[in-house]
Length: 221
Image (cartoon, rainbow, N blue to C red; front, side, top):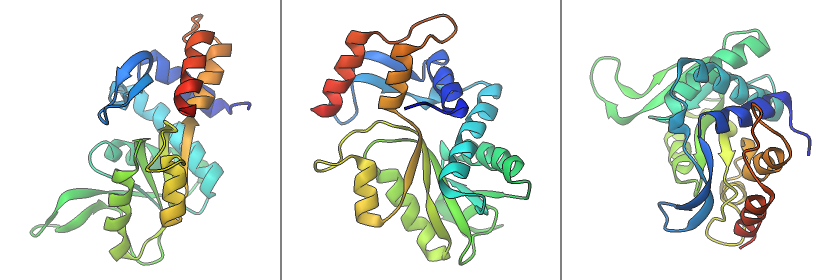
């Protein structure tokens, strides 16, 4: 599969910032993994604009030009929502709102559970988040948004780890099956690995054939 310019730029950013690394890792779930993703490594000012461009391109490609509000769950989703709304607004050439949730509803001042653009019934919303593993955070976001009546078109995540959920399908497939929600990754781990095993980034080959085979075996197991 040929990656888009936005996807290639995003993969380059992943490895430059060491947000995607290869080796032997033990995940929070206890499962072993030959790759590790840490979007907390995107901690430079310029990273935010590059992330926003990658997310916005995916929002436009998968959900069209009618999104009114970008929602980012606290805390990692907050800067992503801001950056995505800004970049998406430039693509569709109209105002686009962004909002995020509080961990606990505020009962004084501006009050409420959400901060930012208002969420009213029928508003087309896309959720943005960093990495989807089991889908727990996304399920929580959907539950919070439901009372507002907003029309959630789907979600965009940075990388689909392609880890299995509770059965034989991936977490993304499981969410679509259970909740009918579309989750669009900027890149899947398979796409990123295929690109990196065949292409240099800044003159360096970040992934060898043996490690690519380990990733394939991990995903198949």
